[in-house]
Image 1 (spheres, helix red, strand yellow):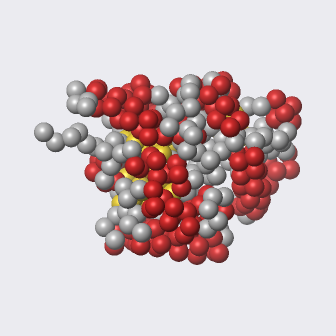
Image 2 (image 1 turned 90 degrees about the horizontal axis):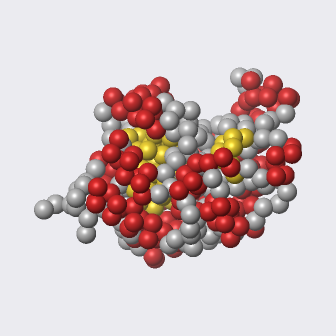
Length: 332
């Protein structure tokens, strides 16, 4: 009897319909490799590889391939406002394809050029979306599926709950992955039972020994509940889910009046967002690797409610995968 599968397991070539989402700066090569080696999909975040871990993108990719020959994913941010960045991303995508990466997750822009490159190599492209209008645009660009980011996600969360985003995007008849709010096996099985083709987890994989973050970050996730997750627009000019901390409670989580005015401008909003993003990349790298200072924050989603211990990444994958198989009556 053949093993159960979903559109995601078939498209990505993995055993379990589970993705370790790309996280800056938390996606280090050892974490990515551990997830893929266990039967799920570890996703390369190229900025993390190039500027946080291993000294260069190529070195990070070499390190992953030393640790596993299993399928890998790649996160391509296709925002086009900075030409030098777009050129660098194109070179990283090409290098990943040369190293046998065949599953790509795109975000924040038009993924057409990624689809052209990846499809010519026989790969698949899924695009981050929060609602149907963005999914339709991505579909026109040629994507093969969607990462449906809901309102429980860490980082840049969506506005719809998991059921609503599935109802919104599902009729487009492409694979839909649930991204946000899943921290334990029960939530994973529930999402697949709702009709999602797989799930993308981020926060759960930060609380692993393979994730190269400061111990206080892992401890904060294990200790947190849903009420500790708040939204701030101070990191990128767009709401981001982070863990509450006393210092930020005092100064507030919202941009000041001048920044809010600039963010409403058609031209100025891009400059403000770029400034916020560059500043937050430095802050996130510092806090995640070195621990919090008074002005720092940790990104996390509401899945913290299901994370109650630090576990090896491979154990998480196996527990989630076996829970899914058991729900289908096909566990090992």
